[in-house]
Image (tube, rainbow, N blue to C red; front, side, top):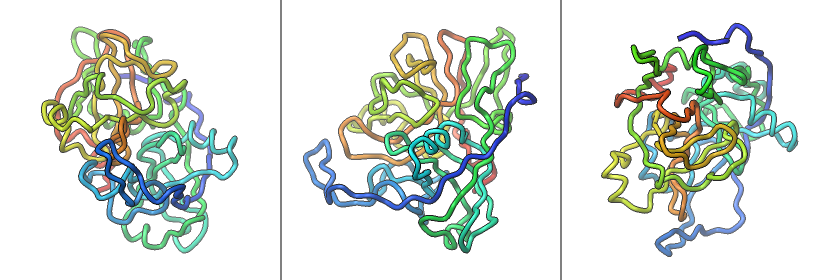
Length: 286
């Protein structure tokens, strides 16, 4: 598998650790129960990539450090150009100089999620500035013009054990496949190069039927019959490969978020099941 990585631009984009925000104390779930639980933003000390994506007493919990640029236009660039697998460096505060890695993007609030070792998380504070060596926008796999790559560092792409098959397709290891009807919040977004969209988890029977009840943060999954070339939509025979980036939700139409990494229209990507297909292993961060 050859790429155009030698022609990619690598440049700096910057955010800072964001504070959690609350508009109302309760989130009313699909079951009618109002819950006051942790949500997005801040520094999450005990939830990291590789941990379960479901089962926490929280809602849309983001692993590690949640970052954002306070300027809206700058944050749009930060959220677009920071790619999963990019290196991050703390620029201020007690953790200055510490290194981390981008593990996902969360749409709506437009956070870039960064994993740091536990000893670094303890030194970080809300407002600390973080710089990301943005690289991956414009990444292409040579010979596969019908496959679009996005949000993906070229080094991580090479670590994902993707094979070119004898029939001329790409075979990608994934933890599970997700049927199109389970996808929710984020459908219709005009761009999959930013953010994520959610696997809905309100039907527990469907989760179990597709082996999704044990999803972990960082798992690579295949979403069937959906494409994300210029926004997310249903398309029979299409496929998306993505990474689970945030935790479950009790809200209707929500659940663990998936940031898209690859998408193909019709048969260019096939998958093989591999329970170890997780970016925590690929990136050596656990």
